[in-house]
Length: 598
Image (cartoon, rainbow, N blue to C red):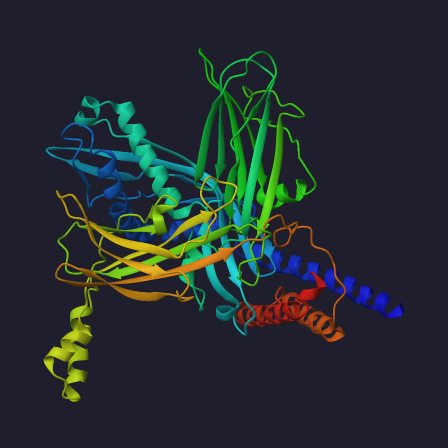
């Protein structure tokens, strides 16, 4: 009994020192790059903006052109044929970060969140046959997150394994259309609506979670950085109590996915049941459910209310039954909030930790098939050709998924010089010109780095039976020509490799090398398990040594961080590096003591 009390006391001490360490690290991070008015951080962005603007504007033009061209293809001439001009720019006003905050999102990730605002003087110039117009004054505002993925290490470079950036949910986007002769001749409202849809869709594909941008400093696959792995499946049932007559519209927003429904109470109060939705949750701590309720008004503006909740909190609150929160009014003209305006119930299926299919009594377990499309080395293509990949499950039991349309990347400007140097080296070994040509060939490469997901769920109309094969099709569209399927390969799910793999696709005139990854995830149905870091319970540890190692590491990290405050610039860098290394040591201790529940 005394031993248990001793362990509990040591565990409480470790918990307190761990909290203290986290607080000190957050303070040390915030005290340097951030101030209340974020002068320093925004000053850095302002200094770097000319370089950021120049590089991003070129890639943005390449990303937008195919989507804008496709969206406007059904409009009358000359709007049905357009291209993005090279003189497009992001303007001189940089992005600003407001009210930043730093916090631990888990034991292995650290996040910096803030309000991103960009009120620009940008211009995206569109060229049509004999005419042109410009999308100007692009404005964007929304919550923005930068997440550092951490691992124990001896230096800062090893401590941070990857960095990803994203919007937790779609931000507010606005822009103007330059009042050119063409814009005045066209239906300006229709044109604006079509372009806004394109802009919103492209932003969601790139930066709205679970779609992220990021870089990897270690062996972490860049696909996992840009598209985090699944944590579990969430089934959500929403019932709304409508207390006033009239027509309403309801939007359920989960990351980049938006589901809309219309409803109209029969008489007085009425309960409206939304269709049950099932979501693949990739971060219960970052992802949110947003429900927007709008009352349509014949005369005057719509009245709106909303409800937003983090997925982790939603699962925790509904673990024992239905939860009835209230809507919040959106501005002074919003709908009145009621105590029981919303009733939420959920079912949570966490990911099987061992990766194996769980045994269910007479039922197949829910399954997620993720097909990561990395790149393809294609044959010489005419300028302007677009490529994409379509993934299909066996027997088309679910709708096909497709990547975005991409152009082949341009060759490196230094390739000619590098090729000559490599040829000189190969000539020393008396290699034939044919063999040198095979080694040095540099075919155009298309890069997607996009994940295509298929969820096989027993609660949906889709059969839950496991599929055996997935077919990958490579498609191409040349300018002024129809879509062409270049070729396809069938991947056996049972024998597919765990990591990235390469397979050749036979096409007319040669072969294309496709780089991809196929991963299967299974989920434990009807499990009461909560997402990571939710409802954590302290469990008695198996070993004293693990706790003592963690306590010692915490103390070392705390001392190193405490020494940072009074040092000069040169010693500061050394102390910070030692502090980070000590924190890495603390993480080693925490990993060893993982059974304690901390």
